[in-house]
Structure formats: structure tokens, C-alpha cells
Image 1 (tube, rainbow, N blue to C red):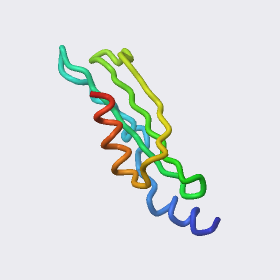
Image 2 (spheres, rainbow, N blue to C red):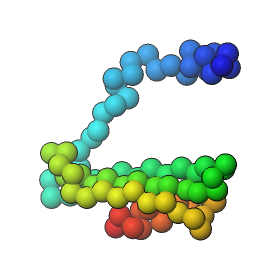
Image 3 (tube, rainbow, N blue to C red):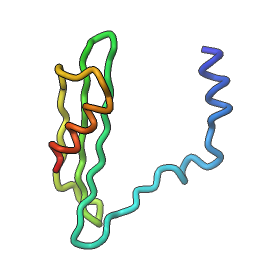
Image 4 (cartoon, rainbow, N blue to C red):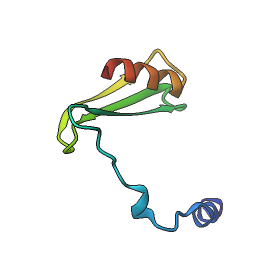
Length: 84
């Protein structure tokens, strides 16, 4: 717990709200955001995708559980391909 608190103080961004900016895509484009994680204890990976237009309207989304991969990088690659 102490290590977590120490790192939180060291890594704390001076203005957290500045980090939560979503730059919209250009007109007639969409933006796809992808995230992936891997649980060592469960031996499973998950990915999520969200696709939005310039106004922030959600055009599509997906959440998947992957049993074949043990690399977050590979799960993100598959998620990007799935989103496309």
C-alpha cells in the first residue's frame, strides 16, 4: 500500500482534467479507440473497442474475451482488426 501511495504522489499529473481530452476526428471520419488487458491469474485477455464520430456519437462498440492470446499487444492488434 505504501508503494502505491508513493507512486501516486510521484506520478500525479498536475492537472488531471487536462489528461481527459478526447480530440474528435475530422468531418466524415470516425475514431476508433481500443484497449486490451490480460489477467495472469485467469489466463484470459479482454479487449474493448469504441467507434465515435466527430460529435462523440457512438457508432459501434464491442467487448470480447480472448482465450488464444497471452500478449496484450496481440489482443490489441486483433481488436483493431476486428474494429476495422
